[in-house]
Image (cartoon, rainbow, N blue to C red; front, top):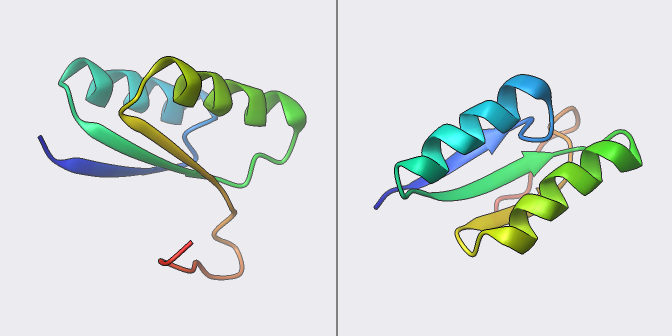
Length: 68
């Protein structure tokens, strides 16, 4: 299965997109700045429950380091 990058995965739309790709069996990398602790908890819970989710807590406003 492909590896998918979802930016803003902790938000309303991003979390539904995340659900869609997980249902298709994709491996998902979630990139989200998690501006609040609540949004960080949302994606951390996905990463805990699904082995195919990797969470990177980093915003894209100031660039993005692919190697993180």
